[in-house]
Image (cartoon, rainbow, N blue to C red; front, side, top):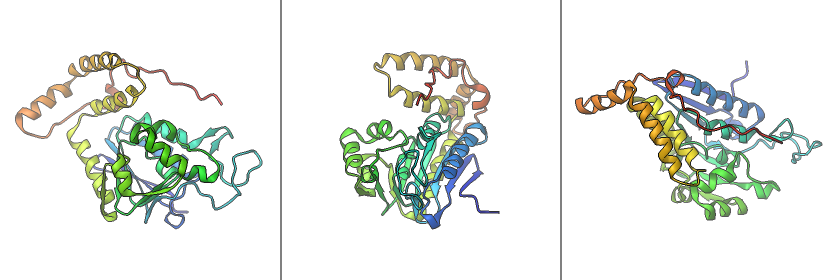
Length: 287
């Protein structure tokens, strides 16, 4: 049996997903993208999983799309890997939207250099930890194409429009220190400590927070980015406070605080999301 190119492991409420193609610098193919999509869905559907960590095997997080075969191009006659579902839809965008829709926090453990989709896939993730010495790059304009994986939506919201345009238009490589200063990553740690640090953050979420509270908070924050007025947040937060305030987790949270003990939250995302969730209408993809 061939070794799986994406590994999925669960321990203590944390799912760890590893892109395992170190001999190809963890470059991405259709199979890798489909496996990543499946892994995010699997974690999202499992009430035992409270947070998801995504990392790479070896010295690279991901060197981007696998360009080892074919001459490039996405047209009908192009040879090699074309990351377009049905010839019309960017599959990296499907992955970004799946991460965006997750009810579980997703943490990127960027263990080494990340280029192309190696950067864009982590943009919808909630926390990004990177290795000291890692390099980042969005070389799309240097390949005659444009950014993918919904990067033109996520990147300016994370680092600001001026930095996003600089990185995306020049296509230059930039160091981990620049990524940290711009807010692309939360912190830098030695390469051999990246995964452990990300898993520690995930474990804190698993041990200290209420599942339904986390799921709602994550979706509220991301989806309010597109709201034109804070009144929409007032409406939404009022609904959420009324719904969750009547649930046992709210009483348990206060009791644990008063008694100076770890909380024992019992809610499950699969069963206890409030009736108003989801409050948005999903848009179809129209090619």
